[in-house]
Length: 354
Image (cartoon, rainbow, N blue to C red; front, side):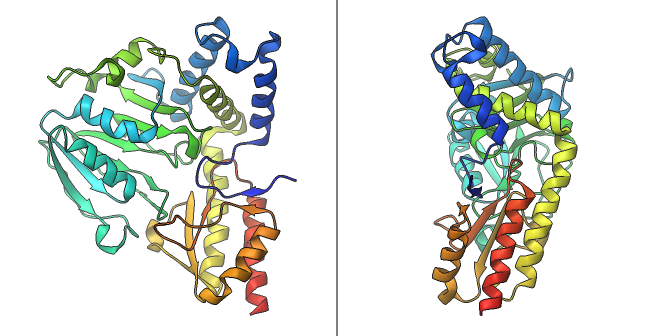
């Protein structure tokens, strides 16, 4: 029986997606060739890439609105660099809400002045800063929508006249937003969309081509758009599985449908964290992530017992990030509500034993 996978990434994937992907590895399109041994220039894979890019825009409601979708490599970590390379002319504003936002700030500083307009570093990033001001003379504003490590999530995004750039690696396709507010969105596939190895970037074309510096070919968004994500050999398997996952989501009813499911899962677990005397949440309640719920035991002497119980119940990936400790339940799109109920039952069973 498959385990209840709360891993923060690489993430849980739908069972039907895994089945189709495994079949494609052995025999893709009944061509008696494996997906991972065909040419990325073949008609079969070009169709995959075209469909993946199209589905991404369709799910976000950005078709025919001046946006392009590209699949790149290097994860969100490379996007920290690419965003600044392509967009930072003189000055940019960043919201610092955790490790990944901090890493993005570090990369951007190599290209111009970086204004940290807000930060939650003062309390170990356990909340989302409010009331910050974005100057109108910056090239763009960068934020991270969901913070996987600590478990916070932006519930609202600022109204600003400057370009809005967002790292949505761990909550892409999980909730409805006005995606037209954003000029550039990027997301490593391995958090909520597919396996590790590819990164989805959604770009409003009109924001490009405005910096004076010469951009290396493989770091230039315009090159990747023109080459339709084929400037070099793409991550064939990761793109294919991401395509299958997006099709799975579309067939379910898209983001509108999955948001309701995600809210149910998060509500179930957070209600138990707040009710159960043996557990406490790590982050500010108003900023809790629907994707990554973080919590700790109020009595650390129960750790060994609790760990044994959830492991025996077939739960995987519940330990918190090494920099935070405690526990982290990642409830990505493909995690069924039933798995969250199993975890809640274990938490209640532990309390009953106390």
